[in-house]
Length: 470
Ligand code: FAD
Ligand code: NAD
Image (cartoon, rainbow, N blue to C red; front, side, top):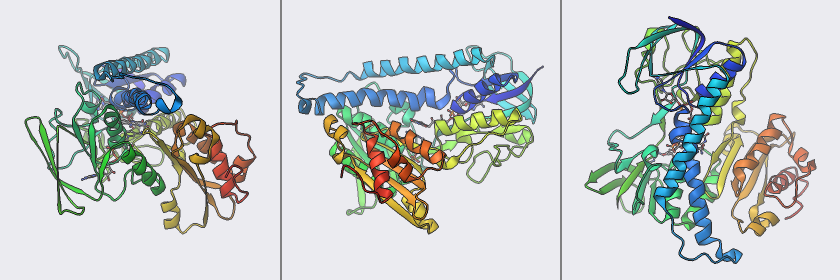
């Protein structure tokens, strides 16, 4: 039986990044993946394919709606969905092949099959490839559970994966929905709703709470709602879905709430995006003494150790944000813990980004959280409509909001919506990592004209110095 220093179950951004760091640290490592490709949800059916189709449809949207303003005539434009999907598949293949290369480079053994615990140091792997094959047992001093998550549904909704679908099927449709109904106005609903609305589908979003992206700073949801409505998406907030039924090619959603007591929507596809659940099916965790918490996540302490000695867990399968970079940060953390180092993950500074248009991003505390804590804070903001770069680019929707400690001026939260925000948020993370103050950002030179200047202006505003361009 082969014995490893580290055995990793799952090759998503949590598992494969842990494997890379283990390899770099000289640990004898193997990674087990039940699917034929490496990369997990993020690379195969999540972050990467969704951003590929978001990019393609954003270009189409610009060509159809913004080119004229720039003096560019583009007649007879046509979106070719099968070609967009084929390009997306090529991008996915490239990034997944990249993970295979990384495993080789870092001398990590890759084993394809379904892993389940025999005991706290032994894992059985049942091959899943063509013809199956004999199960093998592997032992290790350390085992990392990085098995990720799967889409959740509601008890009364049957996901037939043809008409009543999850993000996985929505990322592989071969025809344009005439009317796409979306249950859940969170990240997946809005990103994939944007994709199809841009291509011409009617898109209706039914959300249980009174806001979209309700866990982010409330200002962002309000601004995004306005922008997406302008793009033609339809919203039913504060609606409780009670049924989703399919008859032939028609899907009917029923919900309670709003002015009329009952809402009925008829469409040809329904995307259910009400969150994701931690995935531990078939792992036989009990045999290893690994416990779950009340939400079905693998229970871990602050060092990502499970209730069984030598077994670690990270990423979507444990508490915290279900984000690829959070999983990867935890992958590095666990690998370094195993190697006896002293790593750190600052959970407050894990940014959240929504890749709609305009883009949305936030890091640190929201204004709602600061109010709840009774913290004395200041707010600074700057609208994109006053940004020279945004005006030149004809992308003036958006704003930057900065929250600071009322006594010390330390930046406590940054929340942004607008063009290129997904990249600008990195500056906010950087300054907050070093516990910088709004005035510090005001002293830093920002190239002109850039969208990033809006962050500096919002900081000057928060520091009470006064924005320079407003
Ligand atoms: P996963 O990526 O889920 O990987 C787990 C792996 O474990 C899978 O490959 C699975 O097959 C394997 N596995 C499970 N059980 C076993 C077993 N018993 N044996 C062997 N292998 C097993 N996050 C972002 O930060 N940015 C984004 O833009 C973004 N976009 C997204 C878009 C969509 C449509 C979706 C669905 C998610 C998106 N996410 C995004 C979230 C991101 O994909 C996840 O947070 C991330 O993939 C979690 O990584 P992980 O390593 O914990 O798990
Ligand atoms: P989510 O948690 O972002 O949104 C789910 C939404 O559904 C919420 O607004 C919630 O109020 C609503 N909802 C819940 N129950 C409902 C009901 N019965 N009726 C109507 N609405 C209901 O979840 P998601 O959009 O499914 O995404 C899952 C995970 O994937 C998220 O945790 C997210 O972090 C990750 N993800 C991230 C990105 C990104 O980083 N850009 C993109 C896609 C997915």
